[in-house]
Amino acid sequence: MVFSTSPQQVAGPALDQMHDAVCDWYAAHARPLPWRRPTTTAWHVMVSEIMLQQTPVDRVAPVYDEWIARWPTPGALAAVPSGEAVRAWGRLGYPRRALRLHAAAAAICERHDGEVPSDLEALRALPGVGEYTAAAVAVFAYGQRQAVLDTNVRRVLGRALGGDALPAPSLSVAERARAKAALPVDPAISARWSIGLMELGALVCTARAPVCGGCPVRDLCQWHAAGRPAYDGPARRGQTYAGTDRQCRGRLLAVLRDAEGAVPGSALRQVWDDATQRERALDSLLDDGLVVTTGADDEYALPG
DNA sequence: CAGACGTGGTT
DNA sequence: TAACCAAGTCT
Image (tube, rainbow, N blue to C red; front, side):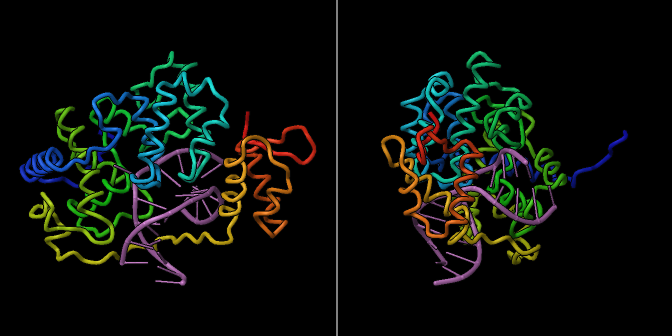
């Protein structure tokens, strides 16, 4: 064969034990999250996954409930102005996600007759849907056998299979291969394994203070066996926020979000002193389509 | 590939 | 308190 990249072999018997342990643990410990109800549709899964990108579960839950009640289908969301989506996004952060979700809803209506596609490639082609989210929808909504590599799963597999304290900054081809090789053969069990790994990473195998005492695969974990060595990879990028353009954009958009309709430029000038930075941030919001000018002099609004 | 992109809680 | 962390994507 041409590409004989042999992913580091994961021991068969131990792997089977790991599958059972994770699936059993999930059955006993899964949280009753809003997007895990029996009535959840593929669209609901997609909404939850976009909202959960870089955003904690506790903050997403209430907004998710509001969204699916208001826009239960892609068609319902596509029927309203994108500004409504941005407003309903509230303070979840990264508001471009609201815009992309709105655009994805429109694309689903146009290209897929209003049904969220189950095909990985079709999912990836939707705005705001990257490698992780496409796999998450394929697995959580459609029960497919795919590796779902979010930060939780990367950390759990990195520890259990690789003996590493934390995953590298970026996803490597070796990591993908390892995750794929570790997938249970049966699709239904594989889906259970994927969501179980994610839940395990969220509740037990956490970044800062992992609770190995409550871990179902502790005795099979390479990192634990090695004495939980500290992270030794490249420095993790820190993210400052105070005084940045991001904070400025957040302030400006909050004014628009909290207003009934359009607001005068003077209202925006009030929330940020540095005029140069404020203008730059406003321009970028206009470029992104998060804010529009109304046509009236010095007046702004969320996109109608 | 590095950097931009929100927001708030925890250590 | 500054830094880190939270179900990433896009350019």
